[in-house]
Image (tube, rainbow, N blue to C red):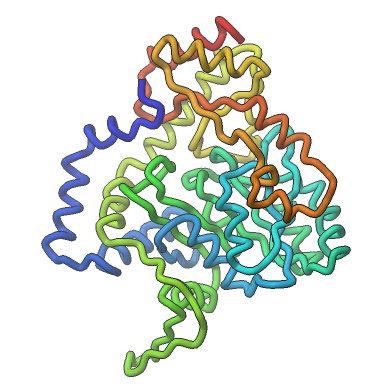
Length: 372
């Protein structure tokens, strides 16, 4: 049984993918080519965001977002410790300080009820709360209404880390359009994935769009008549390759259907699995189901039994970011993050992709129920 479904997807859609790649090969516009512009326009239409700026990775997307709001030394950026390390290491790369906020025990997203206390702590050590990064873990969008209310009072900016949630929604609004700035990833295993690294930033103002475009091209500024190019700040080199954009344009044709199928599989899991805790999806939200996680004190037994039956499972994430050596010394509070640490101890992710067969889902449920 396949955990990600990548090989199955490629086999099923190889003709459409190769056709899109061949168009790029014929033109040889490998950098900032036609498909890059087409992808950005298509993603603006999909999400409802005013502007989409593609870049080289989801990590770069977060860094570009932070730099576009001026985050740097003396600033605190609040973030969940239950995520891939990129959600926090970009904060250090930008020169700011990561301040971790524990997660909600139901949604496993950042707990908005703990944010004000974290801001109070940040100010107490001389930091200005500059931004809140909401991590849409496993595809579930955060409660951005609450996050924006808190940010409005404090002057902080809310950034959505939507690396795992493209295709989801909250409050009837599509991911990518829930905040002033949203970032996503096109890593191969994401809901919309290319065949390498890739990412995008969604934003709502032309000024921010232009700033992000400049930052991703070494800080380049170009006059409207293109008569002169100058470099006014230090940026980076973060362009999405045209070949990857072409692959993504092809995959957009079946993207929404794939999201629908993953949600149907998730409902089957939820209706059949017993004696495990599921991630809560708000009634006003739709998950993209980048992963399907369960919590169980017997996760090791479940994982071993699944493997014996030829069924893969994975742990995302074994440790909170605050427990990683790179961040252990930076978290100056003696406070622990009990909910994150419990979820990390008990989390197990089951196969989740739109190409799972009904009998495969039934088998996963049968094996889990036999030992849970």
